[in-house]
Length: 394
Image 1 (cartoon, rainbow, N blue to C red):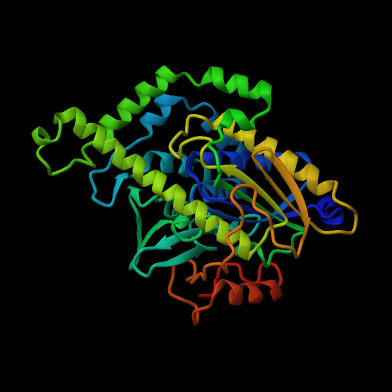
Image 2: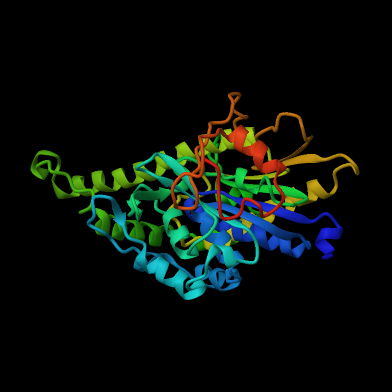
């Protein structure tokens, strides 16, 4: 029996979608390991799927070293523009780096159960990858609609799982864990919250000094130039303010896609938390940085570690014998007995029942009659750990 098993420190970890904000997942994992917790199951969507897969494959340290060194121009060089009408970017350069880390690893060969979530546009359903090539599962999960080209798998057209389930808690229900921790990096906040505002003062000052506005402006201008053709309008530029105005409209469309997707994910995440309240919920507001700011890895990793430490402090100091639900977010750390309605850090929990999920098998055809979250959840709770691995109910 491992020390984590004997001390009640087995964690089922849920990592949500959110673009660059998903770097915070790395800090959460570091905090868990530093305190002796054992991660026994992982579920992730989009950037959460990427971090979950890389961690389970034993390559998180190498990935962290890589992203921690990326500056504005490094990120720009990873942008491989596609002229496909299905997406502005192919993500081939990023996937080539991931391939060098995880190779042809199969999900079923990982050291722990891992579920990555994508969305099938054809059948308008979630797809859970619990077996098959890990690289393909990650690529499907990160395909933000309209931004990164989709993955075609048989008759399926697969895009970012955040379109339907940005915080996939349900796959972890059957895990034999002592607690479920979920990390939502697209949380609503009633007021804009900056990254510096959530970091400890000394780290906030360091990040502010590093964030050179001049370089950001130049970086954005180059991204505008590279993506403008994909968003080009058939309208006559001379009637609409000329080329400069056209470029501004083009970048506005890209920003609108990302901002709209963030809003949708934030709302859906509320429903997922309401339907399956985790034991520990860490919330990072979507305002801390843009989904595209992949040059801010170090600060976001530190933020994840900082908030995870706050959450675990509260969890570990809860009254003995009473199971507590811990919620940590901007300026807030609250605990409540499980069984009660789980309070959200920002904005409150939506009062309606959770949205029903229809979940196909791992990139294959459906495995049975349709089931709602509640129905499938009951089945998962009764199943021993690992029994549902490599399959899913639909």
